[in-house]
Every structure is written in structure tokens, then in C-alpha cells.
Length: 259
Image (cartoon, rainbow, N blue to C red; front, side, top):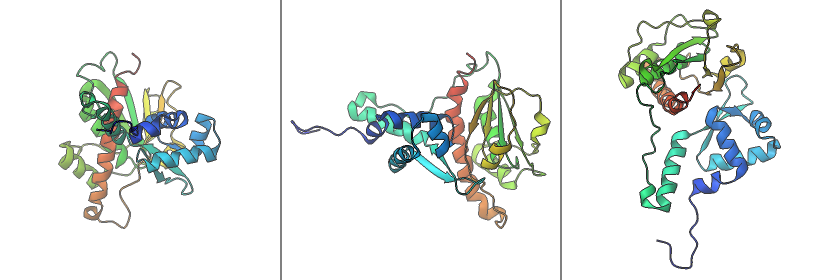
């Protein structure tokens, strides 16, 4: 309860998001991870201005940055959608208790995507970790409502053992019969959404027609050459959790594709 005569400060999310440029940056990052120069071009503002507002969003916990695996001098900015959902719910509750809502992203009801099966392609370099995890999780969450595939620009001979393990132990998904494949194997296929999960793969991923929506998720490779499978498993768990969050937030958008 705010004492009579005193003004209550709005919640942090409201103060951050209310600025027109910061709202535009949040909107751009809600669709895809971007580098600073890409955001500068999209919002048509000087780089120092964009960097200043990105810093405020990072300080507020809404945006994170990861060093690019393609060019270490670059960073990709990512919007933490779960954090935004929690902040929005808390902002509503701060205004009135009846506005408190479950912040979890809704999963479209069965059949809502079926007017035409939406085709989604996930791409990374080796097609042994990130993109097959994303493929398996989208198929798991969307059942038969989507056509989903994954491929790599330089595919490995087989899935990483920890990819199989984390999908089985955390999500109950069996991927023993899944094998990495090259992007060339999908030439001529139509995809509504092409999502790259690797900074290197983003630079070489071919076009799949002008109708395809290109999205980038900058997710670091969890496996290091000097790691044992057991030592890297915790990193695989974190990567799978990150991808699962992104998949759950992708689903409502797929429900509106071509409707």
C-alpha cells in the first residue's frame, strides 16, 4: 500500500518497455537473436544510442548477450521471453491482484495448426546436438501438427551421445534411429520457418524460397573436444532447457502462420 500523497514507481518492466526505442528493440528480439549492427539497421538509430538502450535492457534482466562463435568480436543479443512473461505477470499483479495470470506460454490446442501442416527446418553445423534437439522437441510438443526437419552444413557421422541421453532422460524422447544429414539433402524442399541455432551455420545456410521466414537462435555448442561425455552432460542439459523454452514460445506463433 502506497502512503497517501506519494506516487508509486511503476514496475521495472513497465519503465523499461515504455520507451519507444526499447520497445522496438524488444519487438525485434522477440522474433530472432540479432547483432548490434543488425538492430541498428532495423531501428534506424545510431549505434551508440542502440548500445545504450541495450545495456539498460541487459541491466534489467530482459536481454542477454552471447559472444558469436562465428566472429568472436561480435555478440548476439537474445530476449529472455520467460523473464518477460514473468515481469508482465508481476506488473499486472502490481496494478491489481485480479490481473495476476499464469505466465507460461500457451500451447495451441490439438488441431489448431492443422489447416495446413507447417514446415520447420532447424540448422546447425554438425546436426548432432542443437538442431536435432530442437527437431525432437518441436515434434514432441506439436505432435503431428507440423512437419519438422533438421540438417547441418557439415554434419557429423552420428548424434552426440549426450543428445540422445538428454532427450531420453529429461523429455522421454527416443532418438536412437535419427542420423545427421547435410543441408544439400533438403534442396528443393519448402519450409515456412528456417531456424539457425549456430552462428557459423547462419552464415552459410542457403535460402529455401522467398516465402521462408528466417530466424536465428544464437546457442553455444555445449560439447568441447576435450570434454568427456559425462563432463559435458550438464552443459547439454542447459542447452536443451534453453531450446525447450524457445520452442514453447515458438508454438503460439506457428498457430498463426498462413492463417
